[in-house]
Length: 543
Ligand code: DGJ
Image (cartoon, rainbow, N blue to C red):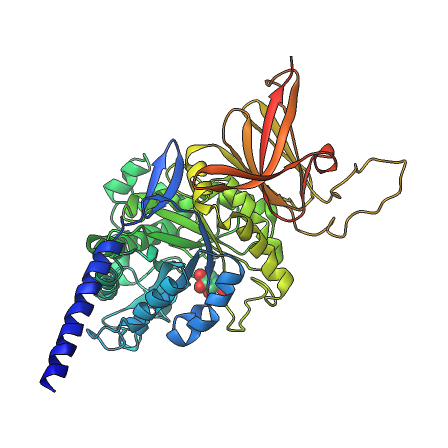
């Protein structure tokens, strides 16, 4: 018995020693966002990382649902899961914290070789307080909801009360403390404090405390950041005054929570926007007023320096609108990341449009096998064709996601998705012009009259896109599908420019590895990509 005890003690000692050694060995550099020459990278384990992500359904944030998450992630070649962790599950009783889901998530994500983006559903989830614990929901004195103009309660918790902010912050900090202690290998690479913040219908809190603050001038730091003279909210923002006010106070609130979390473990943090229409003048009562929509990014930047970037949740199928959204968030001072996009097949081509704008990550929403589908925002079902629309694109890049991220950080990129009218998209990169056209067979020309042909089955479908990265003056990486890509000398390029060589292959640790050369029919009619692969195109000229 004594001997048994000492053996057990010895085992316990060596187990804890091993755990200590393991965590010391596996501790990695904390992820961060870097920016150079207006381009951005998410650095994970010390090197650029392209997040081929997927967001699960809202209620998949329990250990019981996780077995229905990983097969879908594997199926689409995702390297990252975006998944909620809710205030209500972390602190069901005030001051008593339960991080068991987080541990299950970390264990399983590691076992399935996935990184994690943690979505903190706290005071606000799609603007509402549904994910607050019951002791918050039911105590409207301590945690007041906004007041409407008529003095009645609005459904949104007000950002104007420290009691709510302190309570949310305390729980969020517990999550970060847990990560600091239990995630030395940084399985969690990004954190999203709150989800789609703002207020629908009533643009701000009209209660007496809020009105008193609203009566004061705009904070000097905001006026300065916007390069405007200090004045009233109405003087600076006109009809958007109430919205600007709620944006500032919501962003300050989120910033304080993010900063407190970062003080524990400085993971990169971002916020997601329930988008207004693509126009720059949304109706303050029709938008999630306070959220980081593209026209108020500068208010968010000034109010929330602890937030690394703002990000668009895209559920608009119109390709022109999507391009405007992507352009609105891809800024030299804002890394583009698409944390949510519809999972219906017609959205999948926008992956290329995002990559071409230097996106550091991308995630269709509702990707798990729990049997829930958020049509009409997303897909009616996750049938094979729907899943393949994104799986094939991720699959082509999955082995070289880090290479792509490094290249996109250091080199120009361009991308296009088939527009609503199907028109060809063009650009110039250095000496070369690039043209992407859609709805063509892999062989032949549309204007051939000497032989009869019918358009391909996908000619009128919302499919097709391409992403290009310029590696050097004459070399390009290309990926895409349902697209014909032509490279030619630009007006300013060489007189006798030619496409010298097209190779199919992949990058392995920064090195191009060719599998075959494309020539003959495969290049005589442009480069025709039906299924995504990776190509290296080399241009040249003759004398
Ligand atoms: C956007 C939200 O951020 C998600 O959590 C989810 O509710 C989708 N809308 C709709 O499915």
